[in-house]
Length: 151
Length: 413
Image 1: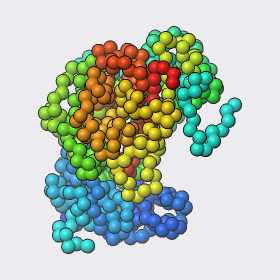
Image 2: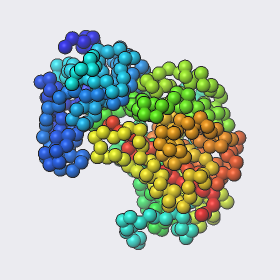
Image 3: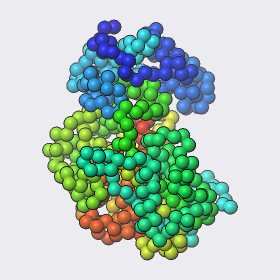
Image 4: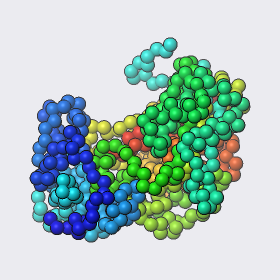
């Protein structure tokens, strides 16, 4: 997992709270190279972002399941100016953020990497990769699947 | 005191015995705190004080008349105090029987107006002061904003830039699903800039805007351009809600509250919501029903305008055209104050400025001004009924969370 982003000093970037009891297992999954999603054992539905209870049935029977890590681009933006976020992002401009629709039927904001931002399209197939932000934090990011034969 | 509202019953707002009205309003000049250009640099607290001072000057009220009544307070970006009403009440020296605080972002002023109307209708208080002030441009550089968990943990680490990027996702989908063009969103920016030219306190009143300027303005969060975004300013606003009867004692130009409704967290249980659907359609339907009027009766529309696409989507959902037809509607109407479909007649937040968390007051104050016939160079002819909205709360992967619709008129219906 070598990527130019990793070369940068990342101390100035906002860090997620990886110890929050609600999402601790998500971040631990990232460290193992797994994309983990909350799943409600009561009504059998996935959800993202991690919540304290099921957004559909309100119960707290939530377990974690591994996502296939595959999905499609629902929408995206190309960030061309830093506003109200760390100036560290200035070094990466332009960069792409997608709202990724995972096969499990939930959506997730994340960067679409290793692609010219101008080539990103709605509906493109993507798959998760993990990039180190600090020794303790790996972020799930997405890479465009080049051929339409991908599952 | 009051009977609990029964489920499924529409609370009629236009009962003459129980009508509520706005008797006074104020809006301070705005500033971007450019002291080098001779602009003032004030704090949020000072804008609250200024808004109150102007309100007293504009009405027949003394400050002591506000004691023992209701006060509604909008939040401020800074200070970020969890307990803020206590400071505002003490700063202003107001004793009150009821105090409410709105934390619904851009819907805050609309929330305060509808809740104030209810307290007045219940006759708990005679008058209700709704006030807001904010100074985002006076905050020191580098101040960290603490927002909410889904933003700090699941948006900002990926470089999300708050509302600019959120609206970029929404606009991208609107373009994808309905073929909306940059020229169409651009027409919103241009019309509102023209309106601002007639508003002596609009920050951008002297900067004329052409479509080429809009199209050439730099991309911030592509496809959101600089000129799609509202302009942050410092400012403060206030209005006074009371019974229709009382309003006639206080002013010869009462503005009646004909209808109000909210829709919060539309598509709440959807993992895959349609991001182009706001849900304000639901609030709008309820507000029009309560007011017993239709979108055809409206003289002007003041939609909350943090972004041009927000205006376009509200034209669709508040009922002026079908969903997805907003672009075409904009192409075929003159949106200026003298046009056939006047919107944000003072320039709105895009061109007059967005005073932080007080931004939701801007469409309401401009509606009051128009319905009192005090629009000056931008007065809408024969203005009788107006609609203002407030939308707020950046979601995770959905449209905005809070959506409020207010219908005002200068006659009781």
